[in-house]
Image 1 (cartoon, helix red, strand yellow):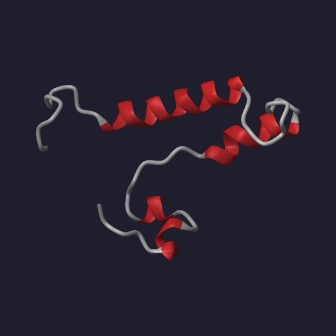
Image 2 (tube, one colour; image 1 turned 30 degrees about the vertical axis):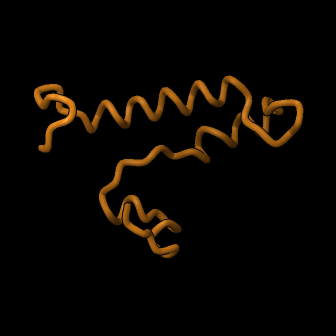
Length: 74
């Protein structure tokens, strides 16, 4: 596994390297502002997890070519 420099991780590094990413703040902030975090105030609530999972599934689905068998190189 390669090392990623901090400067690549910050400020949209995924976009610079054409890596599809989920916009977590767009999903998370409305939930936090509405008070839908877990009672400990530190963790996402179930609704937030569901939305993040759906967004991640959409990103992964968009990257996958169903004609390519899983486990083979493109």
